[in-house]
Image (tube, rainbow, N blue to C red; front, side, top):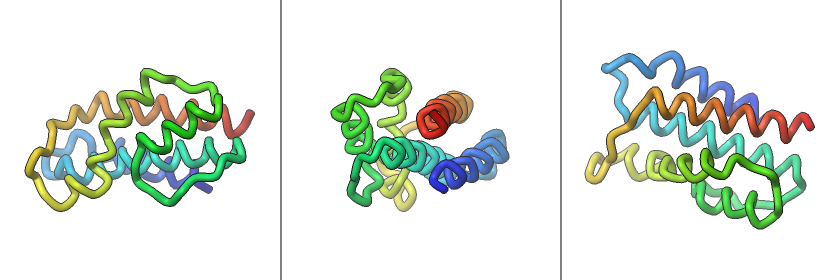
Length: 120
């Protein structure tokens, strides 16, 4: 179920990532959600309990401390998406630029990894 939900977020990002009329806050939020749900799917499949949170650093830390084989570079990059979950959805102060093409590749990579863990 979590991977299906991540797929929905990814589909939205893929559909709107070139549309300048869609705010970075919307794209960033759904990119963050895709990563969050992918991580939670991996943790669930690995029988690791986690708290309800949007904090990617916490979820990534659980992946690492539980010895789950993961794409560490991609996860390190994804950690920067945490701010899009709440903070940048409601205010623009400190909102970093969002490279939508890079974000799309990143969330695809993380989703593919998550799929291989869950299905494996």
